[in-house]
Length: 326
Ligand code: GLV
Image 1 (cartoon, rainbow, N blue to C red):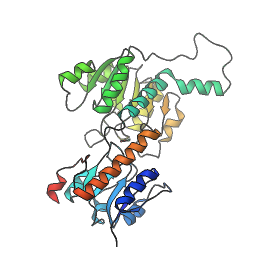
Image 2: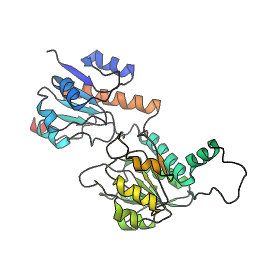
Image 3: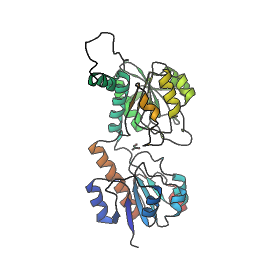
Image 4: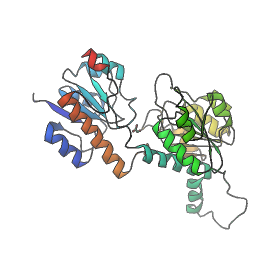
């Protein structure tokens, strides 16, 4: 069978055209989520795959894909891919860093503001025709300006959000695995603190770190208990970093004030408990979803695919050690 690359989800025409200049392309312009079985069938003879966050790419699947050389995720995060399993089999993995920082940071601020200032709740109040007078005491929310923003994770996107927090006169504190250099801390007026200090002193906790075995359920019942009852939690990172059941309980009991969520465990199967709460703003994983950014992400993934298959040197390789094992 002739070599081909698989694009698992609908992407922009220009991306497909670019790939077609280089390879035979099997695509999924219908944009259905490919079941495990369908993915196995379509990937079996592919030399490269342009994947998305719904595609679970693990060892058993890779064992069926004898020709596969590269998986190019159309996302900066890649927790849908078992990178160690790819490395072991000499399969390159790439992501799309950089192109989405500002777009995701804008959306993070939108969720901070929506959840803390209760913007969707105000709109519901109006649509439900409950707005009969301009009351001085109802409905009320909390301030964003001047608050302490605590960042769990402080990479490129976290720093882009911090820039926005500073323009709201916010105080920036952060916690992450690797402390950033002093010059960067100075730039964002950011103080490195322990996880406990961050949780107990932040008005707004922003999660913007990768989902790994180490960060799974990083925020559970204990952590939510440490947070201020007046605090807002915003998750712009990945479902699985938060224990959703524990968060639903905390929001229901008023252990924290509000949450703004773009990501969930087991997407797109939302825990129905969220739908019963009024103090959470729910968004279906749209942080990077602007026309420009999604075009750039798709082209970036395609560029990685072409580079990986033509010279074995894609710009955004996340597992360079795979080159040694192939
Ligand atoms: C989106 O969630 C991404 O990781 O780019």
